[in-house]
Amino acid sequence: MSDQKYPKPLPTPSPETQRFWDGTKKHELWIPYCRSCQKSYWYPRDFCPHCGSRDVEWRRSGGKGRVYTFAIQYRAFHPGWTSEVPYVTALIDLDDGVRIFSNLVEVEADPKALRCEMPVEVVFEDVTEEITLAKFRPVSE
Amino acid sequence: MTTDKEKAGWLKRIAIVGADESDEIGMVPHKGVLQQHSEAALNALDDAGLSLADVDGLFTAGASTLQVAEYLGIQPTYTDGTSVGGSSFVIHVEHAAAAIAAGLIDVALITHGETGYSNRFRKVSRAPMDPWFPAAQFEMPYHIGGPPSTYALACMRHMHQYGTTHEQLAEIAVATRKWAMLNPKALMRDPLTIDDVLSSRWITYPFHLLDCCLVTDAGGAIVLTSAERAKDCKKQPVWVLGSGEAQTHWTLANMPDLTTTPAAISGPRAFEMAGVRHDEIDVVEVYDSFTYTALVTLEALGFCKPGEGGPFVSGQRTAPGGDFPLNTNGGGLSYTHPGMYGMFLLIEATRQLRGECGERQVADAKLACVNGTGGALSSTGTLILGAD
Picture 1 (tube, each protein chain N blue to C red):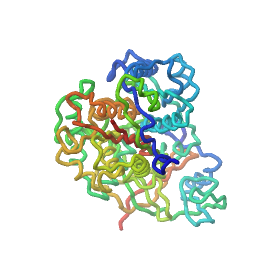
Picture 2: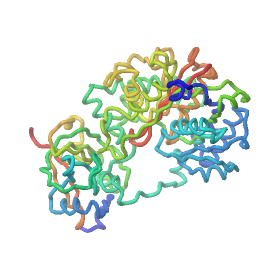
Picture 3: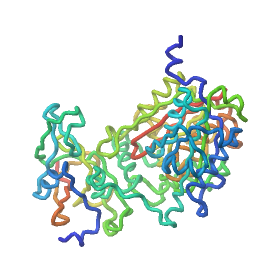
Picture 4: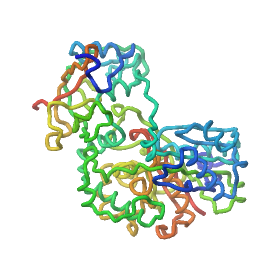
């Protein structure tokens, strides 16, 4: 897939987040973790926003979690998404202890098919040669 | 010796002495943002019996204080461009009160002007975000959308956790429309039913179109000064009795609890400072970007318990004639909402406390609670205002 063919906004990895994007490219989900207060945090920073420590590292996530909340989008706010509506945005509570924003895929964009607390797992979408996005799909309990 | 309460509170030392909209609000394609600011500023100063020459402190959001001051032809010696979304102007009141109380300024002018409706025709676009910013990397690629979708995510969690229903949200839209029907300046004045709300199209589930605020052109301004200076003004002062400010997050993934708002922090600060109880408040003006915003704000401010907002607003309790007058100008849902609506909460609360509201006047209104919300339920400013 070339960059020209992907019509939606793409992330631009920064030095402090590059490790995350390197991970998704390999179909791995890596989350920052504070060795000082022993908690994960989101999004990537070179220090821990819980305690201010700089003693932080990256840990690989199991990629499992639950839907904290979701919304169904019936309008595209960017022309690249016009053909995708309706689509589902969601906040996912990962079992690793962080909440991240993403899309729910492989599920009908219908309130009857969706509920808070439904279990999900990460699925990787290679959108360009450089960028892979981490999205989530429902799994059985 | 001052008492603890005197040290903490503004008591009756700071007053709102002027408040008004710009000359035309609603759909005003022939006027620009700075015209909206300036018309409102001149109207509010006239309402106070003051002039531009009296202003030494300027507070605004959206446009910079440099742009607004030059356009007005003033050279303020104290400025504050705190810009945290629709709550900004409510927060400016606390900042202005502090500056007046500290003796740094005598007269504070807070201005607002936006052309949210007409921008689309003039092709006014927002400045692009720095691509390294967290929201650009971790929200935009998943197409988070605008405020309808962020607030919808919060509302969905509230519905899941507490059983809040579409019908309860619609109660707010209908009650607010009834107030708008009593306000000649409101844009939407046709009768509305709960069925109308529930049968309007989805914008972002769980929001129907009629759960969402308007997008209009408008300007507004208020003027504050000290109690001493207020004696020379045209109308009775509206006292700033208590104030609070809070913010909890920018990206939605970092919002500590999606079922409340920072009003749970700013609200208690304002009530405690003013030394008043919830059951003493006569009229409540809170940001209603969506029906849900008003509902969750009532909970966060403590007018009801967390999760009880749905039952609390049911039975048209917040409509004219109900026992909880809410958003008496018709709100962002039906009166006007140019983008950052907080200014208009202040104007309406001031008018209610002065008894200037005609058909929609809440009888004997002496105490008002105002709460502005900004960002993605990110920031709030709460005020307790009072009349003599």
